[in-house]
View 1 (cartoon, rainbow, N blue to C red):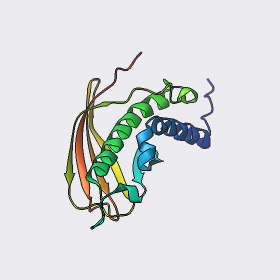
View 2: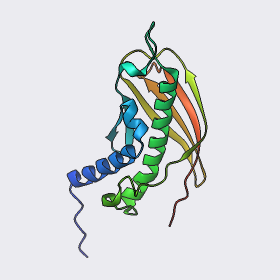
View 3: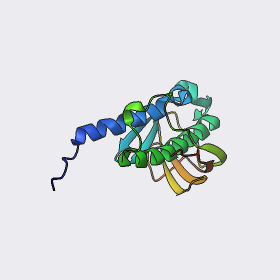
Length: 169
């Protein structure tokens, strides 16, 4: 019995990148904050490019605490959604061509989100990665860390609990 040829790597990468772009573009606030996501395999790194509008205390200067919290929450929600979407993309359950703002899967809803501010966010680019600790049919728990110059010295971290959207099918 002949095996079907696997898809070329570039086609698979383009499909994954298009799905991630559709997911991120579906949340306008992500664009307002200037957050983008880089993907290596199934791992996402959020990058919030520095902008003067993100400063909360101009005397220090330091990133606004609400901006920091929003950055971490966005990273958590997109990371959690990406992990769900990744499974569906790889299994063929989702057609990446249909992923547009109108056909995106519903995002998880925040139940609670606790931020630990470890030090002031400096006026420079920030990075974050989310780790899904538990993801079930109804509930998920996510831990996220944000850093700037040195990943081993996070400036903030958070833990969030999310209500998972119903998965049709």
